[in-house]
Amino acid sequence: MAIQKWVGIVKMILPEKHKPGADEVIFVDVSKSKYLVPLNTDSTENDIVTNRFYLAQLLQQVSAHKNQVKYILCDVHFDIATKDDRLLIASARPVGNKFLCINSYRNNRLQKNILQLPSATATIDLQSGSVYKIPFFGRFNDTMVPYKVYYDLYHYATTTNFLATWFRGKGLSFNSQINDYYLRNKDFEEDGGYIKIGLGELVSLLRVNPGIFDQYLRNRFVLIGDFENDVHDTYLNEQAGTLILYNAYLHLQKNKELLSAWYLFVLCLFLYVIVWLQTSKTKHIYTLRVKLKFFESVTIPVNIISISILLVLFTFISSLVFGVNISIFHLILVFSVIDVVKFAVGKLEKKPG
Image (cartoon, rainbow, N blue to C red; front, side, top):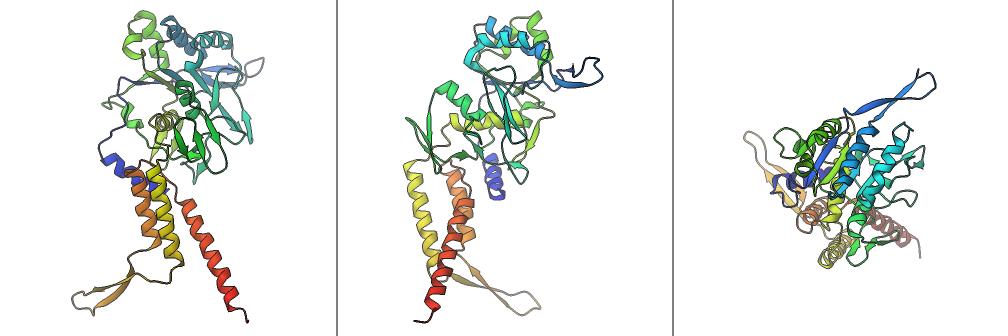
């Protein structure tokens, strides 16, 4: 994950070719659009949820304009009943498959939204506390949000086994992706170029000026989420959870998950070289002589073709040349198996007779 972070930093320095235009996406922030929901009859206990009345009004505006948005990703889990649920359900239905909310994992179970609206899983397993790999399907054969959005928009089905995923009509992929972060939190801050607006503010503007729809929403990908509180660590930096999901969708939309024939050839060639180096008794040692003033010269042996260096080098080539972010964990596993085999063979050779 640390190696992938440096790959990501290098990509941030290079010109960004795949970043969506500022007129293609809008972030609707719900962090300030909340209300209390009584949890008992005398309202002595309450919970805080996203204002569903405002969400319903926003969806009504979308359907009134003939659903002329690209897609609405509502990164909100509806797990508590409110008085506005019927209105929200009725407002979401006309939007059809251009609207998606989320499910989550709780107590090692899949908890779907109680409104039975179109949804997919947004809970991602962490690695060392950070978002790293994002699968296409979850623990319970449930569909993850990025692939569900991709399927709704482009209808590419998949066939999956324990080794790889086949996108029908497109190509082969690993079973999970390590996506780049084209859009980041700073892009939606002041002078970032991208629009972030509060849910309540947007609804108020749409009430008084219908032209706001054309300015802010028409033909855009609408991201609805909590920009302030729903923030997670990734292998690169901190990102709003909604942006993590959207960037994972962009990874699919730009075909970054696919493995080209050239890439598979280079990968096989690399594995062959690594296996040969691991099993070969040839050493590639370069003697580096260092002479410091007032000190005796020091000789430092350096392995100029070390496995670690080759792994790092291949990670950079894989990402920068082929656009494939690969985890070296599986490659390290291959080398570990080779070491075990070498150890076993060595033990057998030492046996008498």
